Length: 254
Image (cartoon, rainbow, N blue to C red; front, side, top):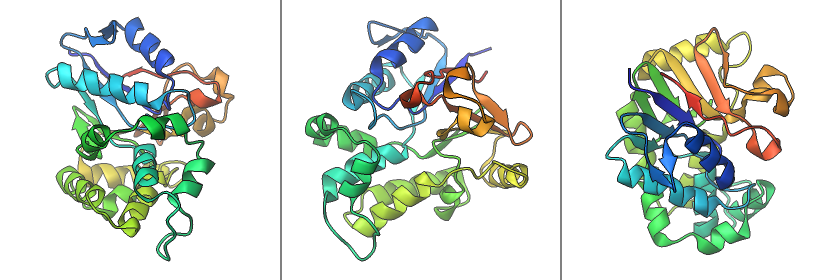
């Protein structure tokens, strides 16, 4: 059976990401060595941690050289990084805050903004929002906001990418909002919501980052050693909360 892995919300912690990937034999000297394995990055390369650009460049190198074995999805902090670059302190009636204010609240790193290039941005603009791998529906956020773009994987990715090609601040604010909603699958109604999303988009389990596994499980960050399955097993949270002292949860899905 082909091994399938996913990791999310590395937030600039490139050394921890390297160690996790090396530990599974997926990389060596920052190059892909995973052979027939598959690897998914579920977004949030930037902010909070020391070197988001190094994370981005490592992810991009692995995607580019792995002949389809490595793939990446867009996260809300990619939207924030590009929105900050495009709009900064621009004020608009369509947005309750500026992107600069959001970026500061989310611990944006000046060094990431200074080193973010047009080439980086062009690559990010081409990333999908959701994907299916075997029985798993992969997305960055535990959000039903994706369904505002459409009710198929193809429709969501097409509409999401079109929004990211927009020069309108209102469109970028909607990108941020939809990818920042969370906790859709938590609580008594969570399984029903998960079944609705899976019924629309396909798959048997939702795999997401964004909301920290420890918070969903109600345990300290440092107690988390693996992904958290919840919502009657229909959702799997793989954000280890690395910027809160938790682990880089490289998770084997299959």
